[in-house]
Image (cartoon, rainbow, N blue to C red; front, side, top):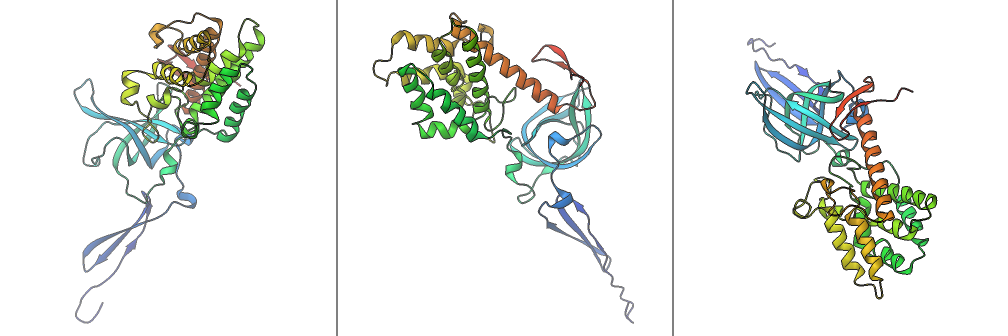
Length: 358
């Protein structure tokens, strides 16, 4: 304070919040704000969805995969969001559309504040504040879910199964994709097997395919009526149509081809076109292989244009169904609150799901 009575003082307040330091400067009774963006480090590391628990208070950035504007029974508007990071997905609800809810759209990175609750056995985020995240506040790699298995090791296993095929035409067909087609190999390794239900992550298609191949190999060893080469080849190719049905990450959503045709038809068409390039490919073998692809969902109401008619088609359906459902159960349990034994009713299984007591 000087002799003229001019009162000048500075007060600095810094808080680590929302990935920034907010510096409040009081100067001559005026207020100025300065925002300095920080990189995540130490105690400010991102808390992934898989680590969330009921009661947690959240102030974090997520990828908003879906945004729906809905209405409650009382006639009030609200937002239903699907939030994602590389560890999983989280249901989010914005019940009150007030000033703290800024504009944002699906497929944008958003910063949310709220509380984690447990609703019908699954974690849900009740959001109080939301805004678009600014560039530099997040690392895009944190929001792309990926298999926790080694992609190259899984692919090497696929190649080993191909090397053991005895039927020359089937082996040549498999090699034309998995050994010689560079574009196919790159896309197959990175693609998901689904949008949301199971294996909906980078490497998911490869992981699911390898699991189905292994189950089919077991069936072929147990039941001599099965043509092993036909079944293993069908298992490798059964979901290749998903590479066109679903877009790449981060979207991982249905394409126009996926919506209009579906992966079963697309896969059978891709396979049929490649078979025509292999001289002398037996007609009956091509027919049986394509039948396995077309019928691998087992029932007409599940999307297959034909029901299984040969042993290999039945075995492929059983293997695909088993892996898909057990992986779905795995993801449900991983996403549920560890304190909840009863997870709640699941529409996919049409059953009330419970965690096994260990």
